[in-house]
Image (cartoon, helix red, strand yellow):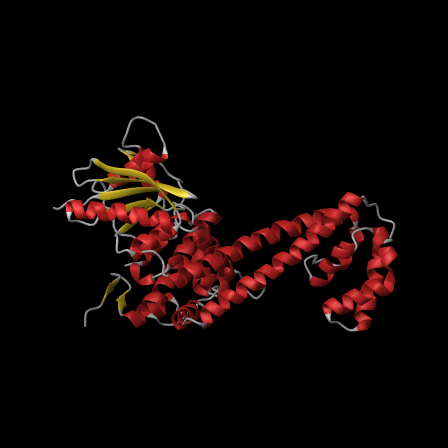
Length: 427
């Protein structure tokens, strides 16, 4: 087997250290590459020198480091170099090859280079430009939603101290009318100074409701905040309430802007649109969940079965066995995307939630979940249902067919499966 030269690249924010090894694994060249075209051209020149010296293109190995590795990856692949992007867990394992605990960027670059040949590393399949855009938009949506939840909780905490009567009028403090009013007035004195007419005018303009409803709301606000309840009113609290209200409105605008870009991406890509439509036929899977699944998974065809997909999502169980000792209750690996697991959990909850009448969006999954809860803790039952949902997702995307709700008996009859032997009946 011909051994090619290899370049290990330790990626950081502004620059990366690289170490090029010859086929016999001696150091050919060390250096730094800054993440701009002039410097990266010098790296290409070094790689070309290696190629000319040994008549083989070197393989490049780098660690997945936030988004910083993307710049070098795109640049190197553009110049036809094979690039392997490894997980941080793999590079950590490489650092354990040596007993010494010394760690510098130069040493890390060397260790990354020495990994090639020691382990079964394969060229990386980076997501396409469109999938990367989708992934970034979905992650940004999630980050904004998390900021929104935190900000709304903080707003309620201050309003309940300063304007307890206001909460009785606007139980949903995140409404547009509530936020606009709190961005102008954040104390009992400020509301009273503004007066009935001004408050009613703002509510009418923001909510686009009738004047009678706005006046009724304005009167309720003034009555509630002047109801003689105890409150804490300081200029500091008022300033904080106004700033949080303005922040929440800004976050909501950012979410709208982000989601408009997300929708445009789907409109311009027929394949993405078809994939989302297929996933949305599954009960509990909405637009956002479908978008996250596509963005975080990329190509569903890269998985042979649902177990591989579940492992990619980090839903595979941890195993810790040594000799005759096997530890239990180790949970799942959580090595995949935490955002996917979050969305799958929400989808399961939407699928198995039962109405007062006892109906569920997906009665088959709900029955499965209920059966698991009889013998397992609730969280374990939920993980089992998430794996079951992953199997459904895999089947829908593999067969390119919309989801059909079937009872187990109906599925057995359609597939021609012997319910006793659990094998397909031969023709």
